[in-house]
Image 1: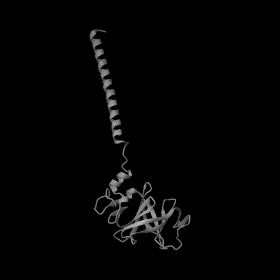
Image 2: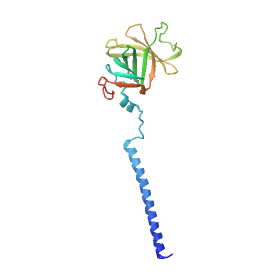
Image 3: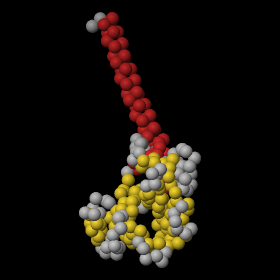
Image 4: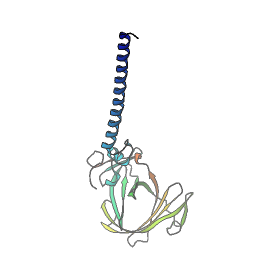
Length: 219
């Protein structure tokens, strides 16, 4: 091999070596950048449908109060009054709603520990519909007793109840997650009977009395 050829081969070898070194450095740099980004965020990719992100977009049901507007499956309701219950360390709320046509429903909101929102309607009068049995057959469903007890409540807005008092309750659940609830207020022998449907978080949009999604106001 003459001197010129040897010089070219040597030069080409140096170029290849440098190129290989640069490639390795780029790969290492990219790996470190990705690792640093993951460590700085403290977690992996963010789920946009996570409860906190959904609350920021659609309002937080746990902050509902009289005067707010709740849109359920495209139908708007005004919050007329709210009941806040406490039984030991367990708390939940019920909000009485009506629309422009006078239709009345109520919404229960509970975190136990996951957020659960149930839309309730009044059951048709039925003298035979009484609480206490381990299971109840009603309207083609068999409901089984889920929980019962007695709680204290405070009332805000138009609920038709005293500012505070006690309530006895029996809650039943069907295999398809439909709900049946009995509530007896104070010493009244009358039971309020409701049929409930669990709502998906995306089925609700909340507008507080200020007109913007309810993201930071305390009820």
